[in-house]
Length: 348
Image (cartoon, rainbow, N blue to C red; front, side):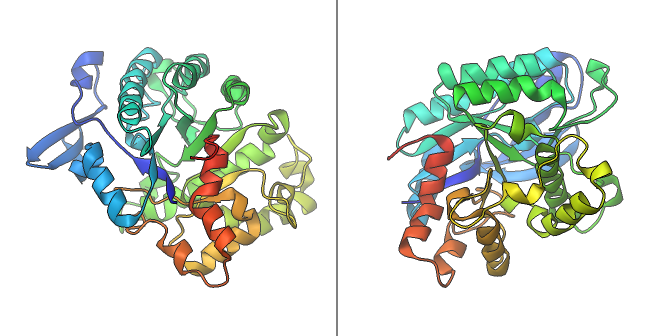
């Protein structure tokens, strides 16, 4: 069995959001030829997509070819819209979440859903998280690595995930038993990376490392010990930063351990005890994957392909299947067992 934790889906169509909310910056689709569309922000093309980004039956065909039993669906991060007015971001979240829930209900053995929430207003976000779980039957939500600076909310600063205003969201997730999947967006230092696709190649891994670091050093895992959090793209650059982070914790605790005096290394795997949080398997390199297993343990690494986008793994689970030295039990854990535990799916 393969459960793909990291896949993205959009509705085929949605209203003109700029017109609906009365200001610009929202995403639209242009269906410019059969089975193909452009994701547009204003007059700028963000990405070209094909029908597998919105057609569940086409996705199932691709899954069957790759031997994927179930996809976990989440929106495309460009739809987060944390910069928008909270009421409008909530309205958009309702629309996107209802769509994902509808797809999962139509094909319950093939899809599970993760919602999206308006993190720029943590109280609204917590309420929509509860609706996703209690009313829509979702397993949790996908969130970004930070909350954008928000001119519409008079918030001039970005908020990292250790911001205490987000505690209401973590508390709701913990009480609901909801999974939180963290995906990078609005990349760190993107203005310095106009060429070579560097925001995606360098910025995204740095964003994810920043998010993990804030949750650890900010004491979020201490305040919410039952919180289940997973990070996309193998935790980004975090696996190659933990040594430096731990060293800084020891030599400059006055700067590093200001909000949490727990060694960051203690959140990773030790012996038979897995790491405190989860990552997906999308690292594209066998040596990087071996380091991931060493740091997290097989019970905290889940198959994730980033379907249907080009930076993803074209054959979901290929890297896991090709890795030497893995037992059949470990491979089964990586391909489906970890995702079941993270999502609270039980045996399916």
